[in-house]
Structures are given as structure tokens and as C-alpha cells.
Length: 123
Length: 473
Image 1 (cartoon, rainbow over the protein chains, first blue to last red):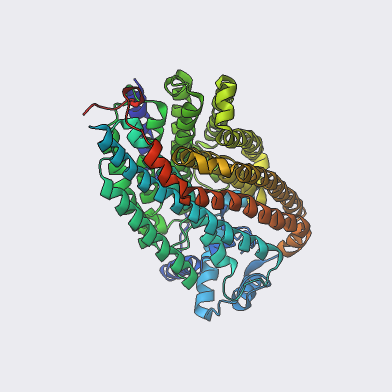
Image 2: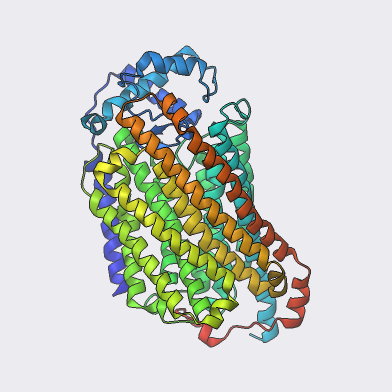
């Protein structure tokens, strides 16, 4: 009986995972090819510099710096503010001496993340 | 097998398990050092900013303390397995292979962090290739577990189910957490974040299976009650935990715009898990006799503190589970308070109970000498953890107020500073408390009386009543 319950739950887990991977996480955001390339490069840079150590995206990450999911459209922050921090660092944030093209890519990535954040903005 | 033969094999098993135990304690000690440095960086922003910024201290802390949790659980399992199975470990060299692989991986991961080489994913901040090596390092552990036990699940106690589940799901979830390497996952932010939360949520569940399984095994040993691990309540709890492990990650994704299917139901399941676990510990405390309680006083005290933290964590989790409140608590230090309560208050207390249970068995004389130190360490740890936890909550209240009034992050941090100071200073006391427990453990393990005791008093051999839920040779 115990093994039967386990197998039922395990099959449900596998099935559920497949549904989450496909139907549960569809995205309708369309971007031009060149913009996608920048977004993907920005994402890799975000990981390479371990930005997640201090910043969160959708709740994943550290708390020393501000949440960045909607930083791009935030009236108190926005693109210029983000660029200034990426260029110079801050009181807590080190200056990573990023090239302008890297800053462009990171901003593109954060702009894309902001576009996906419909639940944030509804609230 | 002759008494003398089992004596030698048992000694080898214990040696390997003890090596894992000491490795686990080293992870905890180093993890605490980097945790303390990170906490100080909250209140002194310039502290080590140039060479060892929070970008490095946080992953060092997170990697080391997570590794403490599963390594301490593995050490306990390696130690308990031969007694449970009634036979020596299936692959003795495999234990040392596991030990060597894990040690090398840790040195490489820590070096990568120091060098500023990251994979940049939450919890798994090391370069992705290290994930593959970590996965491989678990293979000897899994082989030893299943081949030594040869579990007959029909009659096996609940902790064998829990350990088996923990191992199985660690392999599944670590693999799942690297799906982002494929374009299908990487190029869709919602899918990537959802799968990341899903994999990590379930991975934490897999460690909890190993830790809680160890807790239940310990309770059985301390209380002498062999029935509890076979009871319907225990199995009800296990299947509820399993359901929770598979589906409860939804409560992390209230804010992610994925399909809203499973969120609230999943979180209710996770609440019930903690409640039932607390209930099991309470039942154990009622059933244990005064004599036995006194005899095993320190492990018992650690289990009691774990019990208290279960309830504290439960209350906080309930608050966080209300979607309207979750909107405000999400992204604040409430989440940190919750994870500190769970990892230090519950997991570390349970694992320390296992550490001292083993050390006492191995070296009762030396253990006796350090009783007062252990006791002080337990009280300092739990007292400072409470202040640490409350300061995080106070800081979160300031953050929530700042969020409601749409204040700039910098001002919110400035307002939080008094509470963050308390957080850092109580963190220092937490370091001292756990440091006492770690150093004491080292001393007991290294004590010379151990050899004498083994030579003179060791009469251990496998007895039939210790063999549960396993196939005979």
C-alpha cells in the first residue's frame, strides 16, 4: 500500500513537472532578434558577476541591495539610475568597471525582466 | 561473522562516519565565519569591499552552511547504517571515495568564489560544471545506502523511507536546477524562475528528508520506543512531507506570473508538515522516561530546542503564507528570518543532536568532561538565535513600511540600521555559541581516551533486534 501511494505521488510529480515546464510557464513577450541577443548576454553577465548575491529577481537572491524585478519601470529608479550604479558602483556595491556594451546588455536584460513582471505591477 | 570481525568492520565504518562528521563541522565553522563577515558588511558597507565583498561572502556562507546540513546528515547515515542493516557498509572504499570527492569539490568551489568565478544562480552560485561533480560525489553514498540496507519497504521504518526519498530527490532536483542551460528554459524568464524555485524548493525538501529522518531515528534511539517509526501517524507525516516536497514550492511563486494553480493548497500542506513534526517530537517527550531523558540529556535538549523552533517557524510561515501579506513580506528580511529559524533552529539543532549522540557513543568519558561546555553552547546558540531572528523581523517591518510609503532603498536601509546592528552583534554571539559546540565536538573526537575506551570496552556486535526492514544475507 505504501509503495502504491509513493508511485502514485511520483507519477503525479513527473506529470505536474511536465505541465509546469510547458503550459504553466508560457510567455508572450516578443522581441527583435538583436534585442534577444542583448538580453541573453545581459543575463549571462548578471550571473557572471553574481548579482544575485545582493539583488533579487522574483524573490530569488540576496537582500543587501534592492529588488530589481521592476527597477526599470520604477519611478524612483529607472534606466538612468541603473546605468549610474552599473558605471560607478555605490556605497555597498563595488565598481565592476563594466564596459559600456556590458552595461547596455545588463540594462536590456533588466528591461526584459520588468516587462515580464505583470503580477508585480497589478499589485 | 565473528564478534571480532564485526568489531573491526564496525571500527572502520565508524572511522569513515567520524571523518564525515568532522568534515561537516568544518563546513559549519567556515560557513559561520563568512556569515559573520557578511553580517558585518551590512553595518560597515566598506568592510572588505575591495577584496571580499558581499558578492563573495554570501555565496561562501550559503555554500558552506548548505553543505554542512547534508554532510552532517550523510555522516549520521553512514554511522547508523551498519547497525540498522545488521551488516557492514557495502562499499567501504566508496565512503572514502565520497569523502575525497567532496573535499576536493569544496576546495575548488571555495577557490572559485575567492577568485570571483561564479555561476550566479541562487544557492548554486558556483560555475555549473561543479554541479555535475557534486552529483557524481553522491553516487558512492547512494550505492552504499541502498546496497547496505537492501531495504524491504513494506516493513521498513519511516526513517528509511525518508532517507531513500531524500537521496532520490537530491539527484532529481540538482539535475532539474541545471535545466536553465537549455535554451527552452533559459530564454523564457518566467519558465526559468519558476523551474528554479521548483527545483530549489524540492531540493530543500530532500535535505529535510535526510535531516528529519535522522531526527526520527534519534528519537527512536533515545526513547527506546521502536513502534513510533512504524506508526500510522509517522507514515501519514511522511507522505504529507513527500507531497509537500513535490508540490509546495508554489508558495514561493506568488509574485511570478506563471499559471496560478497550486499556490495556496501547496502552502497549507507545508504548514501541516511542521505541525505534525512538532507533534511527533512532543509525543516523544511525553513517552521518554525520566532516567533515559537524563542519560541522554544534551541530545534531548537539542531536540527540545528544535521542537521550539518548529513552532516559531510555523507561526512565521503561516503569516507569510497569506497572499495579501506575502506581497509585503516577500523580498524583506522576513524570508531570511524564516530560513534562519529553519536551518539553524531546526536543522542544525537536529544535526547537532546526532553529532553528540554519535560522539557520546564513541567516547562517553570525554563527552562527560565537556558536558558543561556543550550545555553553554546550546544555550548561547539558542538565546542569540532568538535575538538574531527578532532583529531580522524588526528590520523587515521597517522595510515593509518603506515599501508602503514608496521610499528609496537607501533610506530604508538607513532606518533599518539599528536593527541590522543587533542582527550582526547577535550573529557574533551565534558564532560563539555554535563555535563552542563545534570546538567541543572536535575535542571529544580527538580525545585520547577514545582509543583506550575502544580497546577496553568495545563489545559492539550486530544483534537481531537491531535489524529492521532489511533483507537477510
